[in-house]
Amino acid sequence: MSASNLRELLQLGVDSGASDWHLREGSLAAMRISGDLVDTDLTTDKDFICELIHVMANNEMLSRLDKFGDLDLSYVEDGVGRFRVNVHRQRGTFGITMRHVKSKIMNFEQLGLPIQIMSKICAAERGIIIVSGTTGSGKSTTLASMMQHINDTQRRHIITIEDPIEYEFKDERSIIEQREVGLDTESFQSALVHVLRQDPDIIMVGEMRNKESFDAALQASDTGHIVMTTLHSTNAYQAVNRILDFYKFDEQPAIRSALSINLCAVVCQRLLPKAYGGGVVPAVEIMTNSPIVRKLLETNKLDKLPAAIDSGKQDGMQSFNNALLGLVNEGLVTEEDALKFSNNPESLKMNLKGIFLDTSSQIMGD
Image (tube, rainbow, N blue to C red; front, side, top):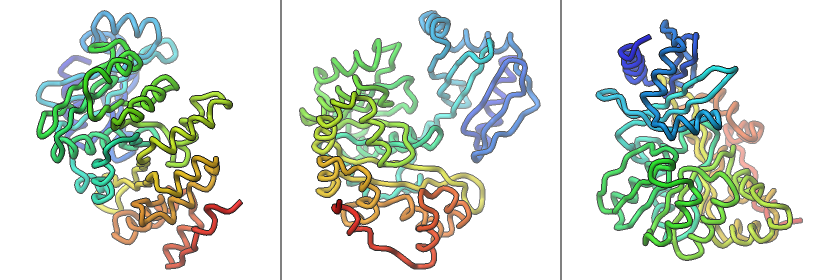
């Protein structure tokens, strides 16, 4: 397989709406299209994989790959597009996963996100905004859309810390500086230590990975900044637990207290196949730091957060079932898929029949 084959493969995928490419030594190259893996007729051999790695990575990156077995970077194929790349060892050979990063950043309406509440979240003056979901759920795309909305509507100084840089922003109303770990800064921690000296209004951290990075996010929020980041979790409630898991048990009460003060919102999403026409559509759960949510965080009643979300429409919140019901009613997804992706399919079945239970009484009781 030659370099021209790679270009053809990437162009084929882009034209077909592929989100990801999977390349392994001695195997057929595969693409993910509308959520499904599709094999191609091209086999990627060892020579091609090694050549591609050396084209994409500099010497420092190659040293990291040799030492740790994993490497994240970005790659641009002229005339085709920009790709986020992960190189990894598997069974003693190398594999490459490439994700297409669309050059055009879509707005909330184009992505199918709830416009009013997303715009309100982006207008926050301080606090931590988390976009969560599983791998491949579109977290980075949603975060980029939020960043672009701020860029279009507000005069802010925005600094991003990413590994690697995915979407490239151009200054509109805001001033945006993008720093790539390994190229512009040694690590997330190093960049976060120095970022407060760079007069930011908004700090975007590509992914919240550990206690040290979240400590820095809390410090930035405490001093009046907005921190926007992504986190791996299946729902908004789990996002809070995921953060607490960064800390030892005796540290968690203080972190819950800090979250009750500094958390702005959690936006969690899942991608469902469209009912018609191919492609996917997001179902979005939103938790805002309402007085009730703040109280639940303070009193360690985290198990009641789902009920608070479900009954918090007046505070801009919506549960996954709320979102799924809306998608079914709009004809965007099938009832079968909605039930498959629901946290509580039995409750959703009732909602689809027009039956709704009052969950507000479940929130503050023992």
